[in-house]
Length: 157
Image 1 (cartoon, one colour):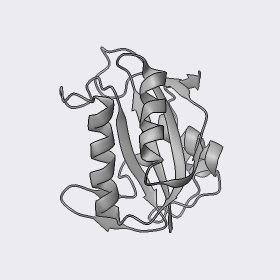
Image 2: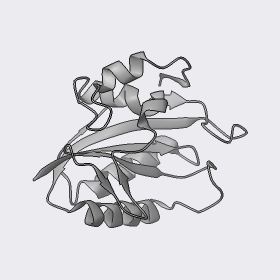
Image 3: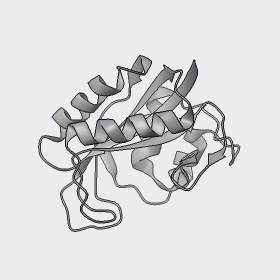
């Protein structure tokens, strides 16, 4: 079993319900799920949209990185994610943040998530789960990465 960390966000419909539905579905193939607090954040990228709710999930899985990616996409579809546009509104967005200390890249998947160090709405929930988690490429803890940020989009929900 491998330890994984996922980021979840929603800014369409009943945001909290979307996240909880996704967590329930993810629990079908991810064991020992631990969920961070839910945070409210300003939109990132395309600014003219509703606020997001964001959290992170830690768990154990025997899925390979590619199998996990396929499973995550199926969960997004079951929750009702509709494709709109880049940085646009979404019923649910689930990103694979870390898969153990694996460094992995394909045409569709990059682990660890390539821009995690820029996003307080990912780092803050990760700090709730494990502030000492070390980014395998940057060789810094998620707490150190969060402390380095100049601009914050997140607040307690």
